[in-house]
Image 1 (cartoon, one colour):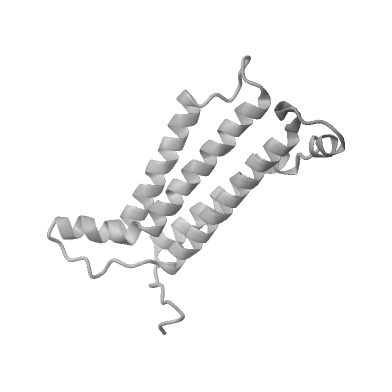
Image 2: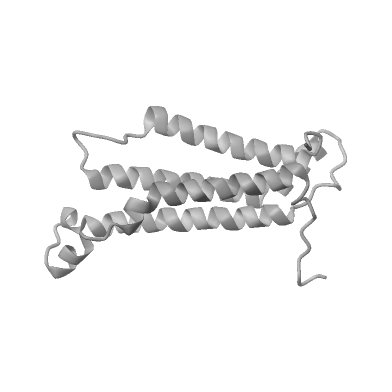
Length: 170
């Protein structure tokens, strides 16, 4: 493995920290069942938290190379070997899919519960039947997480460690 490769170490460290924060939040702080909050609000909290965490991870990945360079420069170490991997760009794209799916789940949740906002009629009846994202949420998030681990494995084993070349500058 590449434990001495600071690119891989910082990338894996960022992922680990974010996923630990997510685990702690959902284990100890986020309400997933409530007798006082309605299901719309419970689901909205869950989906919005996932969206926020994925957004945090997205920005950590976007700025990972810059953070790593700044850390090494502050320590007086060389930082010319810090770059983005091709697989890292794929990971950023995958996190974007996570965020889109979280946003779809959040919007579907609000549409499904339009009656909570005092609306009624045919549109509310139609929207109350929307549940595709809701029932597929765990499965799709699980598949996306599996793809995330595959991309991290590619980077950690060397298969995905080629430096990203911007096609406009090549």
